[in-house]
Length: 67
Image (spheres, rainbow, N blue to C red):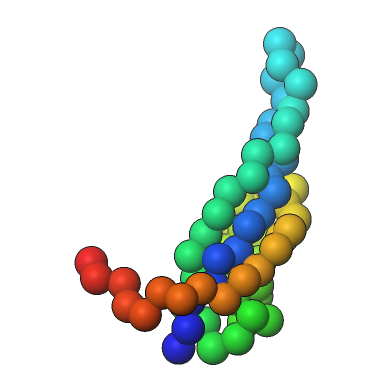
């Protein structure tokens, strides 16, 4: 397994007083490939119904995550 940085642009909800905006968030994903990392993020975000776009995916040099 490898670790991937997946950058996601998420649209925030607009309220009466404010306009919606796009926030960039970075996720560390454990996966076998870049495609699998993107699929995991897509599955996770599709549960909430927010508008989002995966803007980049890069393999990291992280060896192990110690919890």
